[in-house]
Amino acid sequence: MPGKPYDKLYIYELLGEAYADRELLGAALVADWIESGYTFLFMSAASGPAVERFAKQAGLELRSETVINYEDWEAGQELRTVRAGRVLLCPSWDMQDPGPDEVRVVMEPGVAFGSGNHPTTGRCVRVLSELFERDRPEAVLDLGCGTGVLCASALALGAASATAVDNQRATADTARRTLDLNGFAHRAQVFHGDARDFAHTPADLLCCNIFYSVIVELIEIPALFERRWMLFSGLFAKHIDEIHGKLRAKGLETVQHHTDDRWNTLLMRNPDY
Image (cartoon, rainbow, N blue to C red; front, side, top):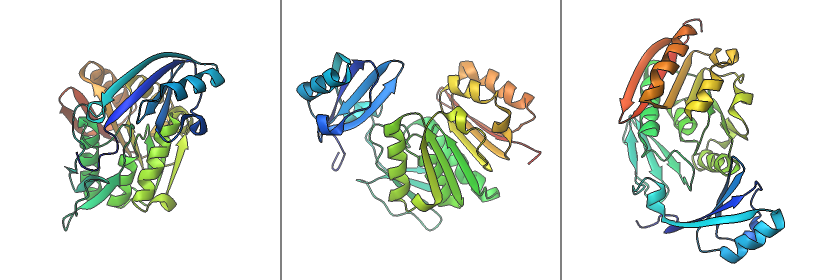
C-alpha cells in the first residue's frame, strides 16, 4: 500500500500505567494506550531495549511483544478512500477530489479507531450526511471521538463548532491532527478525558460511537439528553434492545435504526428541543 504510514506495528504490553516518554523511546514511538492497569506501546520498529529502559524507569513490567501488519490492526483492510453519503473520507496517502455535492475529510488514523472502514464509522458518517440535508446542527459533541472523523465530518457538512473527547491521550492527539488537517482547528476543541465528565457540554448534536459499557453509564446522566439530535453506535445485537428501550423511555424519538453486520446505529431526536 504505497504511502501507508507503517508496514508493521510492534506492540509492547507492560504491567502498570505510565505515559510514554518519547525521549527514551525515540522516533519509532507511534502511540501509547493505557487501559485497566496496563500500558501498551505501539512502535513502528522493533524497540525491545528502549522499551525495557522505559519500563525500568517507569516502574513497569514488560509482559509481551506482538508484531502485526498495519493492515491487520485495521481488521485486515487496506486504508483507502471511503465514500459515506456526501463525505469522502481520505487517508492522507490516498487523496481524492470530492464531487460537486461532496465534502472531503482527510485523516491520518495511526492506531486510533475511526478510519471509515469499520461499519459503525461509515454508517455514522452516512447518517450525518443525511441529517445535515434536513437540519443544520450548529454545535456538535463527540464522546469517544477516536480519530475525530465524526466531528470533522459534521464540520465539513456545515456545523459551526465541535467538542471532541477521548479517554486515550494518543487518540485525542490524533483527533486534533484530523481537525488541523482539515482546517477546523479554530472551530473545535479536543479534550483528553472521561466522556461522562463532558455529558453536560452544550450541543445540538451528540455523536457517541463508543463501547456499550460507557453508553450504559452515559444515558443515566440527565444532561446528556439536553439537545435535539443524538447518534449512538457501536452496539451489538445483544445490547440494542436494552439501550433502545432506555432511550425511548427518556422520551426520545427514533429517527433511524440501522444494522450493519452485527453492529447497530441509532439516530434519536428529543422532541422538546
